[in-house]
Length: 337
Image (cartoon, rainbow, N blue to C red):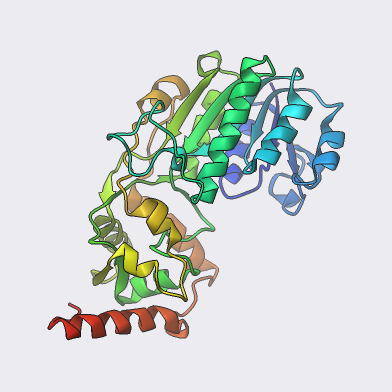
């Protein structure tokens, strides 16, 4: 099968591309060409800027593929460009979406593929993914191509850090390794689920050209539902680090700190993320094989080996937040544990 992967060398698709190569597919990658050495001699490379729509469409207008996988599409304009260039010319189109498209908080749990999707435009990432899904669905109804949507849940892997309550680099991993207090939004009891990219990648291979998947969406998520408290406690255990002191700060308070970005707590992390993945197991052969502890060891091990984890002592913002929160607790006659 002739397969085009738009991306192919990014965080998730670094695991997808080799699976298609090993399966004997004729693979072409479309990307900026910054990481050609990853698959030298094993794939065909078309170099170009995905976001330069005239260039993108010109480069692909005379190409023919059985299956196209877009790992980069994020904005509605990206989706419209895909539709222009691939309509009537590609049998199967796979869109890499996200479980963040679902309404937060969920109407009911677990969340299935037909659960209601988000309508909150303030959650920009999720809102635009919903718009992209809608555009692709409408294109499929008009006969443009067969469509499969894969909605991924917190896909982690080597080269990335561990998801934290707010943005700001990798310093929280140093804190974890050294037994320093870790800030957790709310009381830490909301449910989180994650999946390693090697497991997620197999879902793409199982979907490609698979007629069972045409016209459907699938949740690609882990099997281990964890509270955020368990998330950090189990991560520390996996690394043989001290049991972490978890400092719980209300999400509404974190959102008001000027020096951090806790917006994802407000949009997502404060709610329960429990996804049903039985359809992907049935139709795609998806399996969750990499436990959270093993996931952590791989991710952190990769960063440690490359000396990529910064010294948390050099990030004063984190301790500034802890100090201000402790002052507040002391004013209430309490203090940090």
